[in-house]
Structures are given as structure tokens and as C-alpha cells.
Image 1: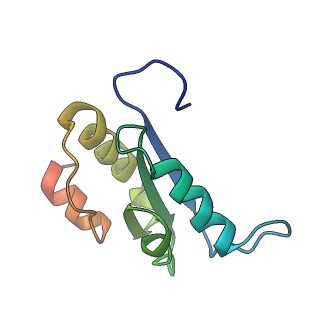
Image 2: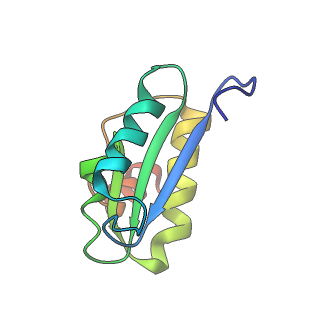
Amino acid sequence: MIEQPADQRVLVVISDGYPAGEHSGPLELVDAVSQLTLREDALTLVGVGIGPDTAHVREFYPQAVADVPVGSFARTIAALLEDALVGGVRRAPCQNPTEIEDEWEVA
């Protein structure tokens, strides 16, 4: 993805639980995120924690929204993509989906 010519690159990672894979875990995720974000212009990386108890995404991703209810998932993703692609402004990460909905007036 980084090697492809583009004005902007956005990678949204969706998580429903703490990283605990058989072949990788939290340390590998931290390493992967570090490698992806070393170059400031490489991409915008956003973590989205879907469902309750997903605050861990804030620990791993430079921009993150946690505890997104399943019913708000589509609106949250739309607002994040609008922010990254149309707005082109990197703001401080939102702490919850309500902030996104209020800011972007997502219906």
C-alpha cells in the first residue's frame, strides 16, 4: 500500500478484542504500527474498536476510536473517512464515537 502512488493513504484497522493471536500478540502489533508510521507521509493509520471494552485500540494506534456500538459503526467509519480524505486534516484522535457524530453531524 505504501509503495502505490497516491496523494493520500488511509488504513483503518477494526478490532473487537485485545491482540492475542497464536503467532502474534501485543508486541508484534506495536512493532507493525511503528513500521507503518515511521514515515509521516506514508499513511494515516486509524484503529477502531467495535463493541464494548475495546479501549485498547488507543494503546496501539496513533488515532483511535474505541467502544463503537455496532449500530454506530457505519456512521463512525464514514466520519473517519471523510475526515481523512475530504478534510485532509489530522486532528487529535477522538475518544468516542459521539465526538465524531457531533463534529461531523452524522445522522
